[in-house]
Length: 112
Length: 112
Image (cartoon, each protein chain N blue to C red):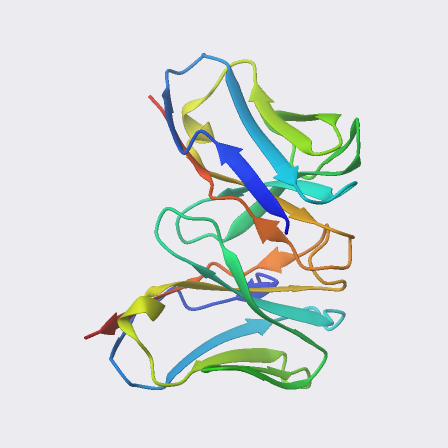
């Protein structure tokens, strides 16, 4: 079993839709959870990071962590064509750092 | 502000040839530096990390090596490339081991 599981998609939605991206994990020691956005042929850029369980909101993006279920989510409201990218979840016992484990990424397409 | 530079963006090399990819960070001192490889559908694999000059740790034994001759310079090398070395290589930095990582734009390496 992989430490982090993420559906690779692709996920295709119309502009304006609410997008839900998810990851599950097996290591209960993970405390820090991150979401990165990666455009084609570019490096990942950090979108959100959260510590332990709970929600964090930043503009149209909301990150949710449920440690009891070992499940994290990223919600995108009012999705735009510019949100079309691959979204990678990542988690570690420390933020970033040596032992960050990344999901395989979900490809998202937002159609105008 | 901090910036990370990685070059070249794309590279096509014959099997058996040497490799040198360079990464530099500006605007910070004594960063943690990382080399990742990203394969399609498989997430990011940590190859090497460094906490200081000439301090390199390898996560995966392979045909590659890394060096850090200066505080903000990280180099990925190979003496003889294999076909299996093809992939998307990403350099990243973090201020500390427990802070989020920031990525360069990546190098697409194709070994032919």
